[in-house]
Length: 448
Image 1 (cartoon, rainbow, N blue to C red):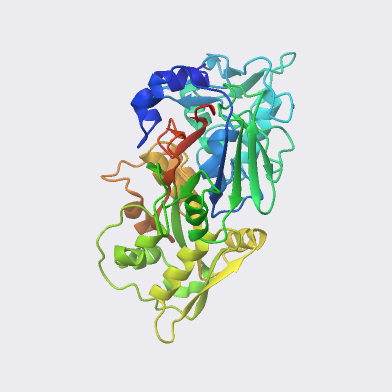
Image 2: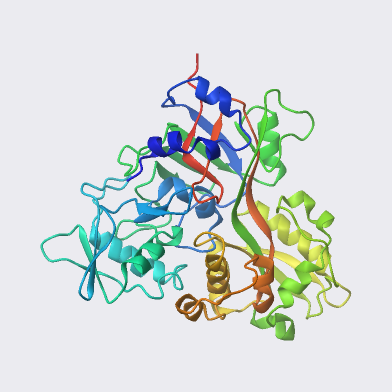
């Protein structure tokens, strides 16, 4: 088991991307305490680690939830919530959970919770990841032991490393997120408050509290940072004048932003159409959306289907701005596209039923780049045979998301990146799997 502080001290080369590392180590021991405030343009009312389309889970899931196994900076697996690696005896493989695990809200975590988490995750974003992993039974007389039948230990470890297979207590409710991570979360319609989790399985956070307010638009977080009412400027550093001492950061992509096509799009909802439209958009027209590096365009981005709504979550101002921008680009006379924000519950219903023409959505990674990229996008596509792909992964020349999406009913618009500017005293740690930041390992020096 790698504790949070051991990992931070052992991975100095990657921990503080774009930050002043030499000054950090000169201070000696990492201090405990401190508070950070920020604004993010996404839904703060819930966090669901098993939801493949939850942007807040992509951004703060690492801080709230743990997996049974995890990957280190070199890509090797190690036990996280498990007490050692799986052990096979005949047809049975046993996974021991660590003794004394408790969630942030004080619930005991054992193999019954692991079994419930696997069952819940399979119904959500982990249908492909868990294609070869059955729901385990709990060993009689030892609630710490989950027993898997007819599955190799390596298959179990690979699946239970995925962030969409995080362990949560039985009866988990996304509006009351509860896990074994570095922080405890309290949600509301306008803010998400993370406080230090004293029960954290792998070490509590260094910071005492992070307050995340839901931003009204993309300028709101930057304006708040410039006005010194926030410690971090999301996706930018200033509107009018740079803040003295501000330090830029870019910790990579936490998810992909995608354009879905649904059943009401007719022939324009066929495989590959969405990506073809996206590939034709000049990068300069999307530059203000902080979607990462975009390729040069080819073809025409004009929508040829019937006039339609481009559905998007009404609680995410970032996704709304993307939808409005794309609607203006895709529209053509007689084929108008209109951005249409919907409540999250209605958006989920439409996504499941396919009752829409186009939709802006998010897809989270389910593992390191490669086959896991294909699994994530195929799972999101819902009709790309994700389980079959998981059982018999193809050998492809490229696993670039935009190339993979050319055979699907979705197109990759760009990345949901962890980037912006922060106060000079805030040390942001990179996530171990390379997908964004690790807020639990981030810190700021104590006030003098």
